[in-house]
Length: 221
Image 1: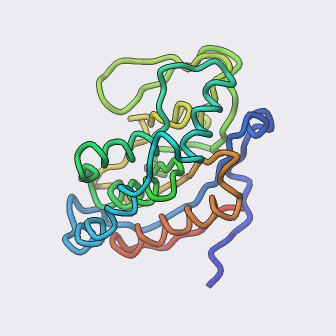
Image 2: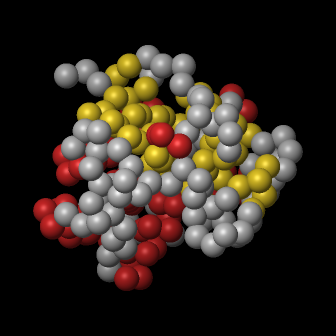
């Protein structure tokens, strides 16, 4: 079955491509998210070594995220895949959040791509990855504070608000919950991740999510 569909519902700023950021989106409809699914937990346990075998200090993909940050003068920031890999090295496993986040975190760590899922019913209009030309308010998952996306940083947004800052922080305004039924899923990569690899990472995430949460997926071209 071909799950690729043409869509104008997403896009990426050419200036973001120039600094080495890549981006792909997909939709998943009709999921039933659980706090924990034993069969998924068993699968993730069996795949821990795939992440443990990655050496974060020398891995080419993780190094490239750091190079992108350096090229635009960003300091003290860690990409989400590097954060996940180092977390597994430190704690021996990834944290368990829910049956969607746990699935995409595993693929994110293994493939070293940025992965994120948002409640599609909280999103308005096309989703775009762009370079900020002014300060933009951002409400990350976690505490109730507002951060500011700085000019020159890239971010993902819809018509109403920012969904993601750089490749490391996700908005609480569009975050998923156990009541979420429809998902926007996206991945980010860099120049060490080919377009084909990025697409396959997105496909693997969608397959794993639907295998354990139900629903159907489409990858947006």
